[in-house]
Amino acid sequence: YTLSDEDILSNQIYKMAEKHVVPLKDTEKNKWQRGDNVYAVYPDTTSLYHATVSTPPWNGFVMVQFKDDGDVDGVTHEKAVAMAHVMKVPGGRK
Image (cartoon, rainbow, N blue to C red; front, side):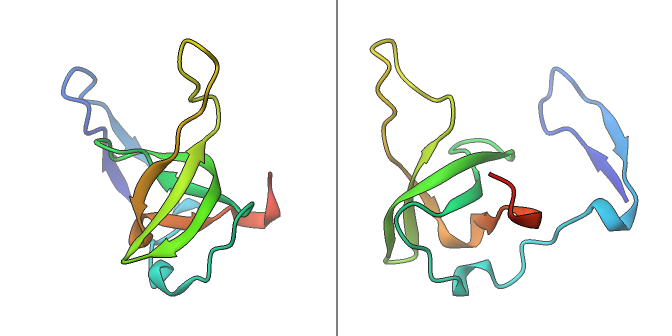
């Protein structure tokens, strides 16, 4: 696969073997529960980041808290992510 970085400033091209590509297929069917470790697309980006489900799915969205996403006071706020943009952490990694 040939992938391009969506960051206009970077404009980098990456080559990846098929075995390293994980399609986001039928992810909206997952039954996420509070505390589940997931990868989720960070809002307003095209990048997956490690997150923890904080509120189960509702109306097509799941609330997550992204790892290392605390504000200046150290508080990590919930963010809504479309269920189609959330996936299990491959291989059970945490």
